Length: 178
Image 1 (tube, rainbow, N blue to C red):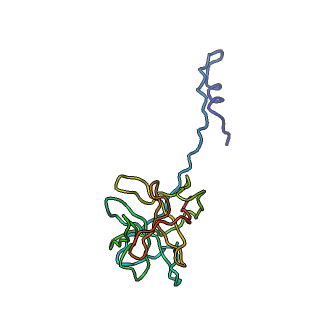
Image 2 (tube, rainbow, N blue to C red):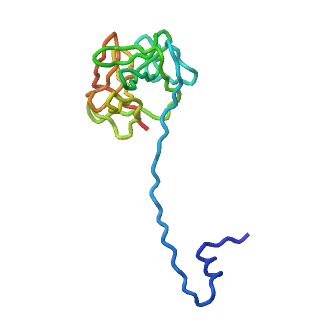
């Protein structure tokens, strides 16, 4: 089977001596990289669905999973494990638990150490937001012999976790990026 370009076909079909209009040049446009974010599954009462990948750990070795809860007119990123009563996250200086939440069930990204405390890498996954739509990103911080998932945003100054009934801001952390 013979193939030809559109320009070659136009030359063959045009009468001899005819002036051919030039087709506009086609310029390649740069491809935009669109990164698919993690998938989420609804859960409640400390349940961790199949497919969830541990992203943190308590000091006793129990795994922690990333959850997101709708609360305070926002979406707050936190932690869940069997035995919890819901998704635990920090907000307004306290640790809260929300009974109904979503759990991250795949791992399309990796952890990256920021350049300085409070920094958020440009390629961070946005997984939540404050009431005023300020973005929140997933972070992981060592604390009390474990690694705690939490949230970081432009105004948090560090990785905010819910722990021991309080919201703590930790300055040694990694951010989940793609």
